[in-house]
Image (cartoon, rainbow, N blue to C red; front, top):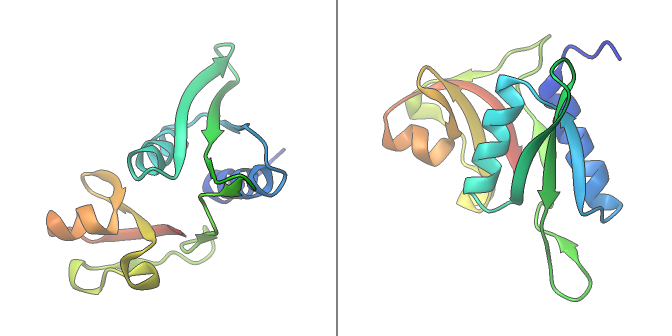
Length: 133
């Protein structure tokens, strides 16, 4: 698979696994997918994640979280914002608020990947990778 947008790929895999009510999903392990998974875990959208596979092809195994008897996914939607063909940057004053602060925007800043809240706190702008709510 020659997908060069690993982030969109990751979001799609999580989205599909959620729809199918899977317990876990696998995404190719890169520095970027690791950082995004870390942010999602810190924000409580996913459970734990771990690396599996051999040296060459590492995967992140992400455990998804559901709530209630009907197992509603905690993640309602994932939306890729900045794409390889059209990057979206935002300075610290214009950081987006997702659903009035219910959701998070994941921002790639000079100090690493973080939520919009964290970036605001540290007074940083950066590339708006995606929205999660």
